Length: 104
Image (tube, rainbow, N blue to C red):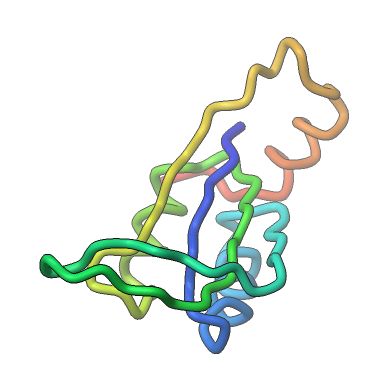
């Protein structure tokens, strides 16, 4: 199981969340309220409002590929963290796996 962190503009966050779940690439996607991001792009410091997506998946690579294909940013933030399943609630990990399609 993996937890994947993605930021997106507010007007795209719901579409990304629904798309991942409907495609069987995520068991659950949580959307935060708006966060303020400060970052450098093309040598210039930018400030933008974004939504943080927290994605629970068994297929991090497939989820990443889908996000990159559907995200409005040229280089979206997609950071996957492996979950220590031994320390996790087994029933939850099982639910995540059952909710996600096997990668082809």
